[in-house]
Amino acid sequence: MATVIAGFTMSLDGFIAHPDDSSEGLFDWFDSGDTEFVFPDGKFTVHVSPPTAMVLRDIAQTAGAFVTGRRMFDIAHGWGGKHPLNVPTFVVSHSMPELPERWPGDHAPFTFVIDASDGTDGVENAIEQAKKVAGDKTVILAGANITQQALKAGLLDEIEIDLVPVLLGRGIRLFEYLGVEPIKLERTIAVLAPEVTHLRFRVKREREG
Amino acid sequence: MATVIAGFTMSLDGFIAHPDDSSEGLFDWFDSGDTEFVFPDGKFTVHVSPPTAMVLRDIAQTAGAFVTGRRMFDIAHGWGGKHPLNVPTFVVSHSMPELPERWPGDHAPFTFVIDASDGTDGVENAIEQAKKVAGDKTVILAGANITQQALKAGLLDEIEIDLVPVLLGRGIRLFEYLGVEPIKLERTIAVLAPEVTHLRFRVKREREG
Image (cartoon, rainbow over all chains, first blue to last red):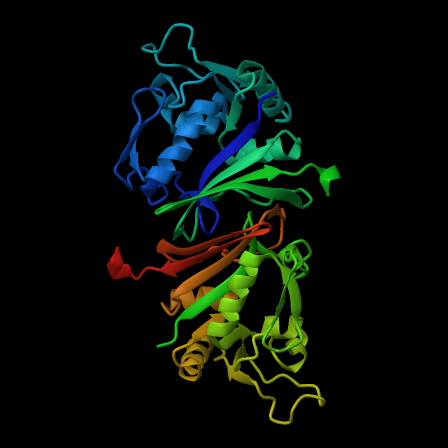
């Protein structure tokens, strides 16, 4: 069964973007070394430290599906028609977007999962579809809102935080008030790179105490 | 010249206490191993993992003074008359507290630094006094408010985060909106213990870019 992992680059004060959705200063680690890493789409290329390259290779090799929200899809302009991880991508949305004509006619690899008007079932539905497609590989979640909903629904297995050494002071928080009881985690991986600390946590289920 | 270090135990979602100031679930790492560590006051004893014991020994051996706010002093009931680090302690306050009679007559080791009515100079004053006392040792800051003021005044050299694997969901944040421009940090130390990730960051000065 596919493991569901939410991944984020986060400042030490807990922000994943500036108030205007820009990310200046958060992704300096994508240009922090001499090791080239080309994402599976064959286009997005970064130059990172060896430990970060290892983390990225692992994510790319194990990813089987990607789930995000309409907001991130719009901000990224649909990644030009294909997410850098180059896996089937599920976008939770209230409506079908108008897609550029230059994209493939069947809009692959995007599947738009239409959310109910009360916003309750889109994420669960998208994760269920993504897990079927991913098989034994992982489902990667992106977006604070999607992650919060997955956490509340008990569908999140792991959280990957790429902790960057900066205090932004203001912006969009990964973990705004979750409206949940405390959730215990277990740190399973820690990779120390010069410009980023890669931390992986497993979400403990309630009965684990 | 003394290094000024702010130290905190923080949940992954950035909280240092519950909404009611309690800290349930944040300090499980104080009872997470077989290595006994007795704080310099000779009273406060914890049982931790070997890596955490190393971090605690280092903090205890290098601490030369402690600066905190009246709020923490009151919550801790003045640590019974002596902070566990057993160093000269400066408490920023709007007024002199009434101290229990069973404490030493001169109220040592506490120095109450009275804040101006506009709350601007108490922290700077306290840190200046603490640095003189600490000499070549470190000045430890505690309290979110004190730390934020020290950061804004450019008086903070390092931040120690003991990151615990839990999402609290709500509570008191270490880094509430700071009201500052982004501040770059450098991770200088990372010690991986089973129940906590000890991360030390150096605050970069503006001219370092």
